[in-house]
Image 1 (cartoon, rainbow, N blue to C red):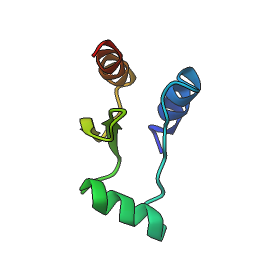
Image 2 (cartoon, rainbow, N blue to C red; image 1 turned 90 degrees about the vertical axis):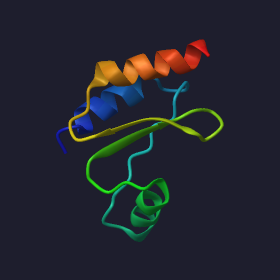
Image 3 (cartoon, rainbow, N blue to C red; image 1 turned 45 degrees about the horizontal axis):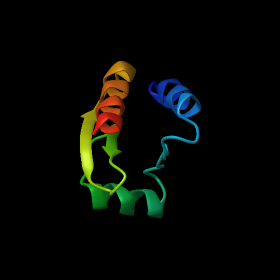
Length: 77
């Protein structure tokens, strides 16, 4: 819940350029997705490239600047 304002801010900043998906781990589809990406703790943040490959993962508190650096690196490659 603490990360929600950060995630919402990043989503707004990148609207149209980066897809942000928030998953509710309490519903069936959310549990299936976290199983698929191997998330064992919440919150877990995963960044995928355009091909669907995981390029970055963070567990716990979200550092918006670290996410921005990772996205910038993806844009450069």
